[in-house]
Image 1 (cartoon, rainbow, N blue to C red):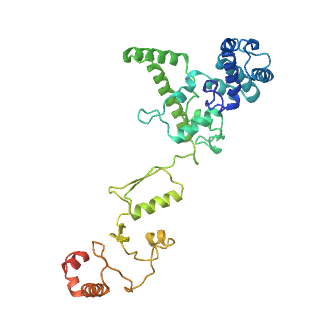
Image 2 (cartoon, rainbow, N blue to C red):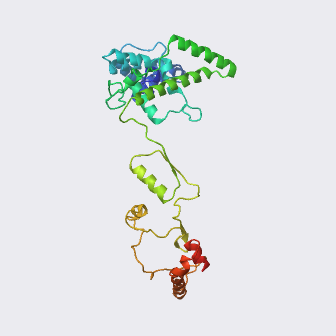
Amino acid sequence: MTSLPIKSGGLGIRKVADIALPAFLASTFGVHDLVNLICPSLDEGTVHLEKEATEIWNELNPSNIPTIPTYQRNWDIINIQRINVNTFTFDSFTEIARLKALQLSESDAWLQAFPSSNIGTLMDNTSFRVCVALRIGSPVCRPYNCICGAQVSVDGRYGLHCGKGSVETFGPWSKEAQDLVHTIGTNLNQISGDSRSKQFLTQRISLAIQRGNAACSLHLQKTVIMRKPRVLIVGAGAAGIAATARLLENGFNDIIVLEAGTRIGGRIHSVNFAGGVAELGAQWCHGEKGNIVNDLVKNLNLLSPSSNSYDDFTFYQSSGKLLSRNVTDKLLKIAFEISYDDGALSNFNGSFGGYFAER
């Protein structure tokens, strides 16, 4: 049913094979007069391959040529009728009623609406999936027991008429509803001056009905077809990035990460410096067990093994100039003396960085 026109109960995603022949035949009949004018020697303005196309058409639709053959729609209507008869044969009155209901004009208005989140005409993915499945007769869910005790089949339609309060429709309106919408729409047209006002109103009502159908179908299910949660992570530091990675690994895709800064990484801040990379943020990963940072990078060859050796240290000035080994040895000696002066450090009221800078 997906390939049927919307007015015929489908989704309007037409097959090329279904529309190619009607399009070609309508074009050929439409240019007969022009062909006669340009090439009067041709028999009755015959177009190349027209005879073959007509023969194929007669095989598919015997003795059924449109009264006005210059319009593709007239050929398409005949073709659709044949497809309906040959392809869609329903054994139950329920399926026949469903198809007839979907062919009413108000039943497809929601598919004609322009999807926009700004004006409320954009369906969420789950509701849209359920509504499309209900329309074309595809499975909606796994069989399960409704909260009222009834068995719900894969078509998910039981939710539309469950005795627990769900009463919905595939889209048809009663005569009274049609008259009411017509009256309101006419008034809207006159007040707004926009002749499309009634059409927009019809689309809004149709969308509301479809959302109600999806809600009724989803609400009664105890098992899956639950909308996955949307996750907001504040901060794109190591913890935020690790949480995002873990959520993605477990199938959560609707994630937003907020970062107030102009970069990600938090305290991890690597910059290009003097032809290499300098760490302006954290430089150490303390702890190899139970440490999420270590777990994230241990297989990426980014961490050196635990060691107290400082033999391979290299120091640069802010200008990028490499300091000599003689100078760096003196700096390391001063640093060690300051660091290991436990008495002065224990009496200092502040951070270790402040203590080190003051000394």
